[in-house]
Picture 1 (cartoon, rainbow, N blue to C red):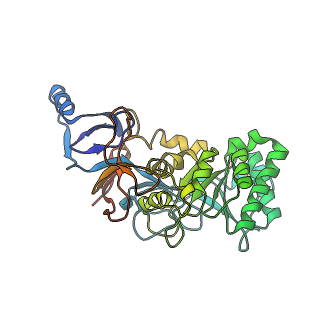
Picture 2: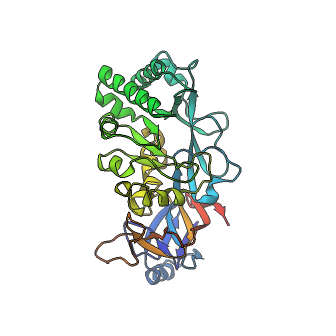
Picture 3: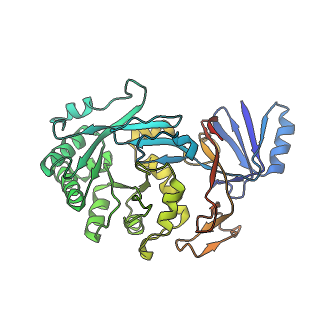
Length: 363
């Protein structure tokens, strides 16, 4: 089926001012202007389905990099891929990636055991990506974390570490550093272990995260605030992803929390926050898993037609300080627009989530 979406705002780096997108066979076939789209439709002579977006915004669908199971379908919040720590199943129309849970009694003792704990899919068909481990008072002790990091790195299996406090964070870094010392930085770099953290981190810790190739998933706290030094992490080349944890699957709020970070020096732009909620979440997955989704995370020709359609009050190129926003963009800048997320502006409302050209959710 060929579907032409018109009369909207398409968030596309290939054409930042596009108002139409053509979807054919589950992939984006073209993005551009409405008048060009109509000429293409007339010349084709084919019976295209035409969808009037009614000025809605079309953006790449979200990746919730740590979303626990909830009653509502994540696709209703524009999420096409939800990652869990293995303590609960990923459900709903959104695709799920689950990490096998690890406790002190299940730490693999050899690379073979680490590989045996992962698989292509569980009984329900949900993709299994690697190993998860809570490190802290209620989870693995430092020696067990070190053993897990060592055998997983040797096996080429990614570990998703979930430290509960600063001591747990230090234990994770020491564990991965030990694996790097024993097997080389290239080994840890290939596996790309990941860590969930929303607390302060001194410069020495950020340097270690960068050196070891760890990515950081930031989940706002119960008040919706971000405390991790996101700007410093990104400045040092540490990949940052966003998750929602046990809260609502509202990644726009997580992006806004990054814009309004309590430390003005750690605020990032809406564009950087949006990347953390989309492409960065795919890049943080093990390569074999990420490859399944190809170039999802972008609305460009040949990419999967995986996007969210949103009703928004206003669009802008929003700077890290929420009080400063460019309400239009210089045509030479080529910057796609995003919703205004500052106080007093209505939150974006998801109208539909499209995955590989098919509707996973429609309001």
